[in-house]
Image 1 (cartoon, rainbow, N blue to C red):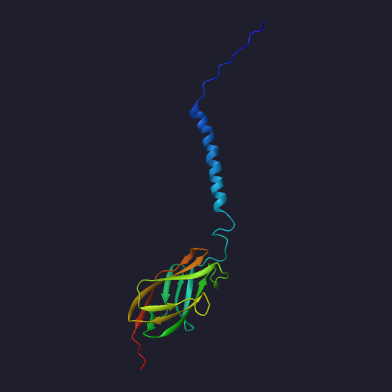
Image 2 (cartoon, helix red, strand yellow):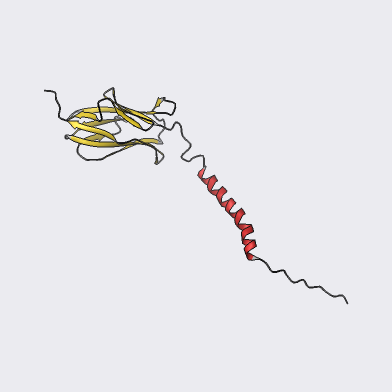
Length: 171
């Protein structure tokens, strides 16, 4: 009769086993998150990203922000006469200095005001997303922040733009 040999299993070191699976598991999870965040329909799938903007009112430049510096053509604010209606347009500045307005329905313009009742804003103006009407409602100062929105997130946020409504000096 033949003797059967019985092998006794070696004691398994659970810590070593867990560590041997932990590194590959972490790598797989990282790759999954990277693949999901790099989806072609995501935030990075768009054209030029602005570094600034140019605001014109009634055809004249009134303010410009370029690479983090905001300048005004009339001192330190955009003056708006009380009761006046001003057509304002925005063009964005690309990194190479070119001016552009974004194309496509996935882009929009949003704004916020630091105070109510100083100015009123009609936006978009005549269906033009990059134009709006600003009317001086009461004397005072308001800060306006403009955001270039792209599919629900901001691609660019302006510095606070100072607008001062002043008494109309015309008689």
